[in-house]
Amino acid sequence: MFIEINPHSVDQRKINEVCTVLRKGGIIVVPTDTVYSFACDLYNKKALNQLAQLKKVKLNKANFSLICYDLSTLNEFTKPIDRSTYKLLNKALPGPYTFILTASNKVPKLFDSNKKEIGIRIPANDIARQIVLELGNPLAVTSVHDEDEIIEYTNDATEIFQRFEKQVAIVIDGGIGTLQPSTIIDCTDNEFSVIREGLGSLDVLN
Image (cartoon, rainbow, N blue to C red; front, side):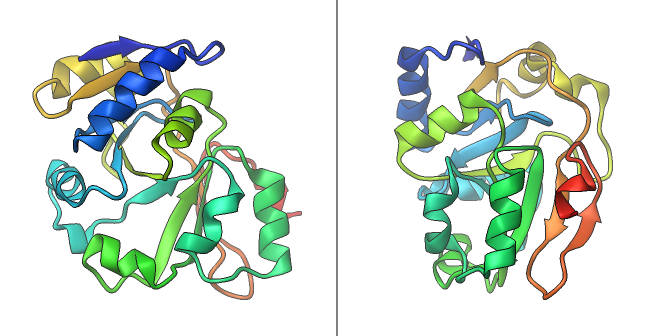
């Protein structure tokens, strides 16, 4: 299914339709403020396994991030964060960043793994965030492109649909995306470290 949603005037009826599919275990392609991403309901184990298969990894080896609506749900999925980390997150989000945080005890059970860290995203994209809000919990996400290769088609929902229509339930067209991934910042140590410089400016660290 191919669904067009205007990111500047989000149609709630279409958001509801997407969430119905997610609750049934469907994989979707969702726009973010960086690259398009595969996504599923975090609490649907069957969907998580299918998402892992799509990326050709086992679930316990998958490095999925969570798209959250805001910072209020962090304590469910991360260990308590210190004041300086919270200040950084509050300054940078919503925005094109992935923050690596120490995972709560809940995370390993979700991913059948011994994961000690989890990537958190709050993109500046109303489509993704409204889906999370309506769904009632975060999305598990992974970029459409491979980690080391951003291919031209991955910023165009029409081309993504042509390539993946048999593997996903819905591709959401939220306009032409960027080919730049998010900036990844590791906050699990006493000092913040940049894992990957992407679209997000490093000025937030100053």
